[in-house]
Amino acid sequence: MKKSNMYILVVPGLLILFVCMALPLLKVLLPTLVSGDYPLSSYVEFFKDEYYLKILIRTVKIALITTVVCMIMGIPASYFISRCEKKWRGLLLAVSIFPLMTNSVIRSFAWINILGSNGIINSIMKAAGMIDRPLKLLYTEFAIIVGSVYLFLPLMIVTVSGVMENIDNDMMEAAQSLGANRLISFMKVIFPLSLPGIIVGGILVFTGTLTAYTTPQLLGGNKNLVMSTLIYQRAMAVGDWSSAAVVALIMIILTVLVIRIFNGIAARLDQRGE
Amino acid sequence: MRKNKALTLYVVLVFSFLLIPLAIITVTAFGGESVIRFPISSFSLKWFVNVFKTHSFRKSFAASIIIAVTATLIAMLLGIPAAYALSKTKSRTSGFIKSLFLSPTIVPGIVIGFVLYQFLVITFKVPVYFGLLTGHFLVTLPYIIRVVGSSLEQFDFSVEEAAWSLGCRKPEAFFKVVLPNISSGISAAFMLSFINSFNNIPVSMFLTGPGVSAFPATLMNYIEYNYDPTVSAVSVLLMLCTMVLMIIVDRTLGIASMAG
Image (cartoon, rainbow over all chains, first blue to last red):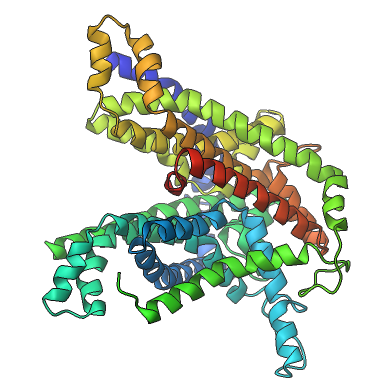
């Protein structure tokens, strides 16, 4: 295709993207870099403030735990789906996609019913005589983690099983016929081959949890703010738009950083494989 | 595959974890008490009636459908030509341009909502509704670029060249030859971006104003002030819609196309 033709087709989209996204981002976030007594002072203040720092660490911690749990639960499930008979595979894939298509408000609401002080877990434990007073499960970091795993596990399963499906079954059989047991042949054959998918799944889950709003808002309550709920709280409840903008830029940088790190890990593992 | 009992049991547990919470919501929607209880002690359909009686639900549901469709159509109008051009030129620049088109995925939704509210609504006095539409356009564009793009990757462009050599002009060839061949990709892109726009919350949190609110944001506000089975009933209705959509997609495009 001629270059000029290509530009005609691409430029309208880019232009709108610039006006609707780049310009608002620059206009709102850039001033935070120079506001205050000296350049970057708002950021120095942010990192000096113990309250903010705790929220940042909590956000990263929740994202990290969620990603690890999603991998532990998701990778075996993906492997199972990818080796299933065709009709089962379609069904299990549909069951994994269904939650993804269901609104995250509903999926978080489900856990309010389960974890709440009159919720299912507390009712069962009370009925069994295990506790006198309801345990505080809801509005905790634990609740946010459970909710986030629930939110993002399907994404991990769908992503990883898609990659595993393309791995030839003969590979596994070859490894086993050469004497490896099933676990070892999985670890040495299937796992390395599906690593690109696992990394992509990891990026999706990690950045998704890092930036999720609904789950921490509904399951975390006001005491367990994360970065995204902090932006909303700063801007809407306190009216402090400039520190909301600071938090916003930190979130973007964090997201880019996480993608870089994951891709870096992927590249390193790739080299080792060769 | 030979049966591996431990693995099968593990997978059963994983899928129970995914499905039981949704099953519990479904049961509680039919409860007769005015607070959510599980298991339910009496049966009632009144919460479903209540959903349709609640004005804010009806209004924001319609608004969210309109916004999701409009945003998706705009994103397709700008995204399909771009995806086409990008698939025909493989160079460093086109790779860079593609990453620009996908860049809205890097910006957290809450940040998009936040800057659009400040920039469009406060600074330029743009009506909130258009701010909301802009935000949802940004959510949908990457889906169009990615899904239509990957469908173009599989298209054999020599078919298009054949049309050219037979005297078909380029725009005509695009509409008569290329577009019909990627129609399933376009449908999948439409579905995905519609659903993701409809379900999106972070972008819509800031972009609400008098009379303007996205459906999930309305639902979320309702949950924060009420704890009755109305929300369970809404959930059941929405899940039914999702099921219908998924069955349609499965019959026409194959369920794997929703994995995009």
